[in-house]
Length: 391
Image (cartoon, rainbow, N blue to C red; front, side, top):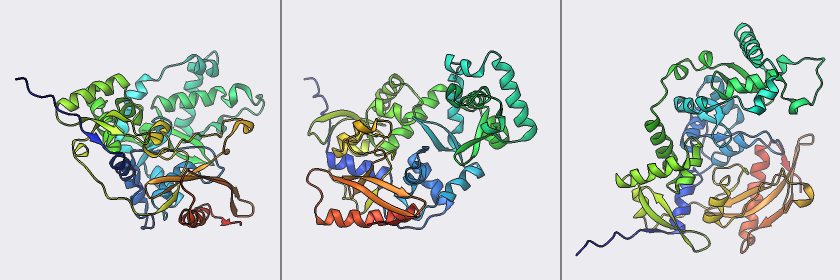
């Protein structure tokens, strides 16, 4: 008789959701003390922290870290960037990344090309513009795009991407320049070799090692994931490469194929770390209530968020006002292991006041305990924004 095929384990929604929250540091007490060193550990544990320009409330990167530790202060992140503990580049979007991962970004640097869009903004003599930018930074030290302003130039051309700005971005994206700090959120550029000499000089990791690094570090932060989710975590490898890696890792016992129960009661195929497949229960997280950023790691993958939490979130800042269902910069609310609501915040920095224009509770939520927990969370969040709640 031929051996019976191994049955594929089924991972419950409860286990998948609680494990995901734990891996993203949303099950611990946010009232613990914080320092730059602890901030760096937060980033290392998360993998990276996404940057964003919108200032409707405190910027997303600070908000993401604060949601995990309410004693976090924005100056801690500035310290890490100035010390060179993190570097700025792209994952799925612009992010701050622990500097020890820098060698793996050399694969990304090598893929940067002179696209038609960049060439058009560099102008007819792109090589000369690049040389000018290099020579000025070499002679003058770190510079911003505004240091290359031509007061006689027309404004608004090329979405403000004048030739020097295009050159700075091209040199940054290809790794020759880095961004050691920002001033009023405008990038300051310097040579990577000056700011991060050892990572800059490090050899490019072998492609096989790079794929293994990208996939293994992604699944360690996801616990349970599809090859697509693994590939998109860092956005460093292709889905095909991640799928091949998952198959090989499963054959080696590093992963197991599993079916994961989702919020809609449908079991979907995925790969999981071996110990996850045998878990029958994970203790519920403490009953903390946190206001999250739209770019929080548990929110940014909208499909995964819907599968694990039944929370259908759409970022509407770039949606015309008349077509918005909720608001410009709506913030999700997490209580324990459930996303229970979303709020539309209004921060008036001139008066130092914070109010909530509207609140929408999820179906079955909004009881007295939920409302009391949200009221307290709003007060804490307002304080983080250096404001008081206006009732």
